[in-house]
Image (cartoon, rainbow, N blue to C red; front, side):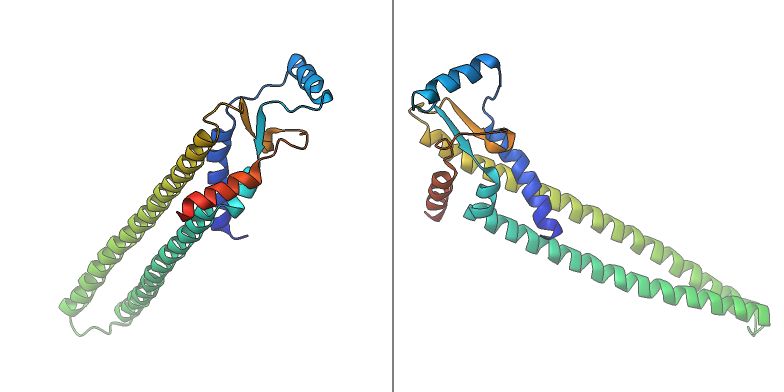
Length: 207
């Protein structure tokens, strides 16, 4: 798994966890009540969803992650191209400075004016390079901010989509709790509705 996928999945998972954990407490009374109901062959009005599976199979999450990854790679190529050009220009400048120092030490300039002119040129070049270096830093910061904003927008989009489905699905109040199985130490078969949630989300997204 590459770096961008890890970043995106971590952010999306954090957002969906906050969405799914509508209420979750563990206490002796609740445990005994649950055991009593399940002992009678009935299920509590609770649903469990695997957020990792949703992130892996929900078409919106997959496509959005791929799109964000492509944008990230494009931005990195843009920044790397400018950085390489700057590095080459800076190395040329360093060589010019070295050559100038050697000429001064060797008395190679025909006049003082010629030496001062070359020195002024190098000083101007140095200022230009400093400005370009600042532009590179500004670009890096801009790309970083853009990426973070895109991540936030993607997280919000996924949260809104899942929340809308869960709200519609549970309009009749059938489930009292909808939990993310990441917070569960153990669960009983019959509570997991992940597959039907993914199927419904993808159907809605396709439409």
